[in-house]
Length: 392
Image (cartoon, rainbow, N blue to C red; front, side, top):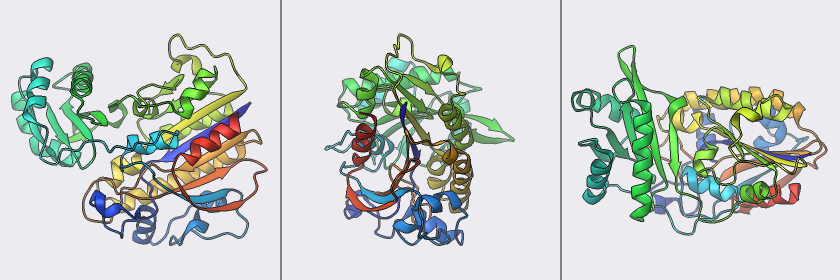
């Protein structure tokens, strides 16, 4: 069986795109390089072995004369710096038009429609904000009014936060579905509605990562995932992959609460011990067992550390991923293609808490692959072509 295994280290960019200033970013953005410098280097022997340190100079990530993989840099074609745009392009779909952002908050007619259709009676915030900061600021008012906290960021997101001990999780998900429908019908061009559940833990509002859900726009065209699914083969989404693609092109999916869980599930998917019957979409008919895609998003680097300006935590998260690669690499056979990449940047060392418009690394590994420096290539969609060539 031919398999493509894609692991996206969310937001691990490696340097500002030439047009970064058009997206409000500075040329000094380089998520991985700056995280390495902040931590005095990282201990990532598996990524070193694959050739990550050969791409550019990262403090503590050594160059190797004997890499086992192919390595290079990808520059984004799409006009954006968000999760949806990056993942869609990785899967072969280039977004020519940027998603809409709302630096002044959402328009009144949109908010009024949301309040009316959800019957939530009102909202709090309606402005760009850090998620952790806004729930701390407005938690008391949220408890007094039971109004959801609705906020955005520099990215194209409509985020809804509630304390699920006050508002049931099922209600939050329903409100997100209503918001998605309103946004689509109104052609607001918003990439994602995000459910941001939290609870009060040890007296502090704390987000519950495992219950987060993303409600993305449906992809505007066909991706390599659709091609594989239409061929009757399996496409297994781990983490928020099914949300990013609005379930399009996916046959099996499982959400995760942490990178650790995502990596352990990825290992199970690779070694064949993951119970696929439990995560299979209804009415999915697998007719071709000769090919398979495993697609994993590791979100902690972005959500827990990039957006929170926690460069130390970011570095530790990369080291944790590397430790799991020690287990993953021996599982990769001659008929498997492992791809490690990122979807954008989120440099925790520069001003701001939003994504940064960056190029990304790409690492390819298969047993017997010819080690090679791939240089700089234009388009995350070169990954989709590589997957298609590998499987078909």
